Image (tube, rainbow, N blue to C red; front, side):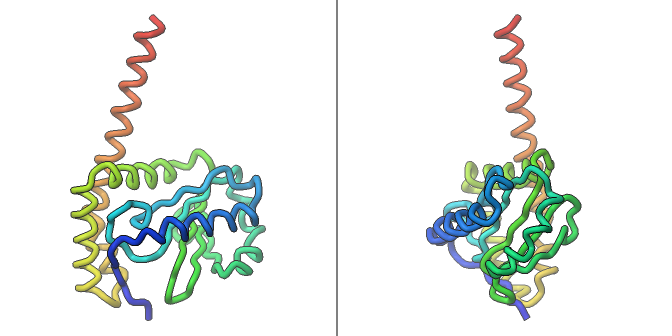
Length: 184
């Protein structure tokens, strides 16, 4: 049984991301357009489950299943969409997970959502601290119940996502206004 563990931020998480991203680029080559470090381990100072969440962006998600054997050779378990249409999910480490891969095709709205959430927490340390403290409390309350842990943080995650996406929307509106002023 997997234990829900939240630990203080560790700088090695960035190195772990970079090392794994290099290996993924070796396996997938030009199929991968970009690889983003997402999730709590990507936010400096944020308490997190010590699992590196990675989000490769690819040209065509339908080509990814052909790489399952290569991913298994790297220690990953292919999970298909794993509940999210248009995603390919891989996990590494069994009950002692080290990495999660969330692959999306360029243009999938999940990409913007993940990046907005990460960037909002990076730019708002008070929100990051509140989120980290909640996760730590939930991990202590539900050490062997990942579903209750996830459910317990759902509302705060939704609130942060909405603020993050509103910020992006406002930025797009401002850029559009500036563009039209410049060209009129």
